[in-house]
Length: 326
Image (cartoon, rainbow, N blue to C red):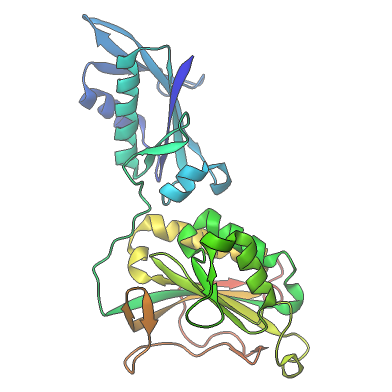
């Protein structure tokens, strides 16, 4: 019988850092660190003698697909995992393992996950919390993916939904529709409702996300297209997500957002995608507007016709076929 803790962090700790945690907790030490056989044993001092307390392994690299759902929605930027196991029923050993796990999480910018309860238990509320000073005007980071309609399949809306949920769930469509007030609700219709709305929209579909993602939109990616006769032999559609730029001051948010950018680019597939910065955009209570001093860039698609690569500076760029041979 064992009790386990998993620590998901943004960076691995070295042996010296782990040993300093044991020293700080007091009356404990680590045995077997760095041995080829793997696994480290933590011992605690009982009446002057060191005894087994728990064992742990790691750090191991993890991908998004490896994360429990509770960690996926409760932690940001995690890339590594430690696995702690208390064999036996000692309450003191379990307490020590829990404290050790919390210390690893604090130093690695991560969370402690309890697999027995399938829950993130530290820090309270997880690390997916974006708080920023309320401002009347902010800068935005806008991700835009461009795809030829002939490359978009019936499965594309569901694929995009799952990628957003897996990499950056703040981008999921809480409310969605083609006009304000947005009529669709994720709570009411779930993924199927959003996918159906995407497929049925011949022009634009909009949605609201959760901070730091203000929301997103699709244009010309539905099952039918109004004005297709004007779009030439290869009509182009687009997908957008818009973020508060202050999230990108934190490497954890940046890593997850860039991973999403790449994943959607590959899976749609996009022939071009970019991330650009828009400045001095008005915002209040999650709503955005563009005043005379807002700084934006020209669009790259007109009536579903591709105008060509941007003439302005971008932060990220993805070149798919035909621009790339990959």
